[in-house]
Image (cartoon, rainbow, N blue to C red; front, side, top):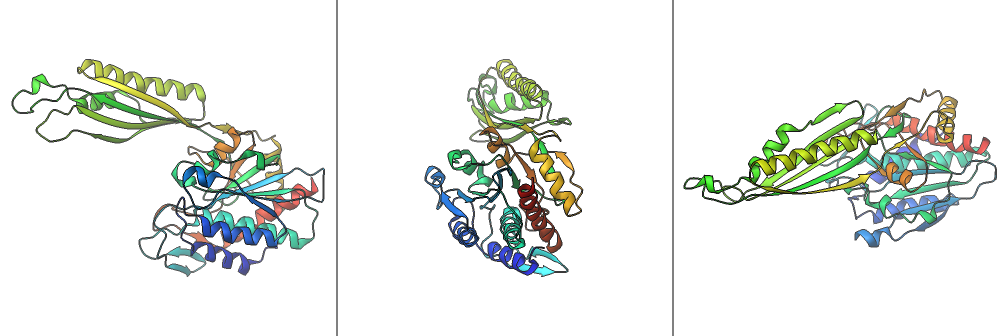
Length: 373
């Protein structure tokens, strides 16, 4: 069994480290020390230099006693959203939260803590283990930069699990979407809004017309779209010459994503033409989607480990992206696992002590099940 008090102490120590994106150095030192004490060989890549951060990604390897066992990777990210400085941690009725305007940081300090404790308890059990790697990434919260700049040559695993999702503990995100960003620059013609508005061409009007025509929000069970930022104009009495729009579309079906993006592009182009404006549209892929069947080796091992500790592991599709998308894109099959935190990225973020323990037990079970495979 996992050591509950050791797990909670480690988690609380991690929470007290302020580690916004690009400032994960102290978390890296904490984790490196713990992994080396367990016998892991720890190295660091150059991702920190690429993104202007304090540290690179941490890749730690524990050679296995069983050569036939699948080589598994356990992953979490070291950064948190801001603010986490000045955090005041509260433990009450088995719930860990914070008091004030800061964010607790259970996303993803809980992921790090359960990996460290689960592996420590697996080693203490004396069970036969295969090769295990731990990957701790930087800058997840600002665009998955750590995983995008990961030196994948350091990773020598068959498949992996990314501990970075909420309730329920142990759910498996077996399917996640592809995501396209859409950046639009609309250019019209400035004119005095009270003297000669007919001589102008309103870029804001073109943007509004385009947005009114495109499907947004929940398109279907696999597809979403959103316009998140609109900025433009210089003064209330000037017909606006410029308007910038930032939008996105996501889908777990590539053909649906392409169709949605094409509709949004067409809406901007048509509205600009009809209002005497022009539209420059840039579409970029944020990340690729992934999908794992129930028969996939990483899913089968996870189901077995969950059953060993009495968890019914649900396989769930998800509408968000994570480091898991990037790892799959780099050729390493991975799935996201639920850690159990709640209301992330807000001052109300919390996690129960029992859920934290349960997730550490799942890590332990995964390590032992892989060694017995």
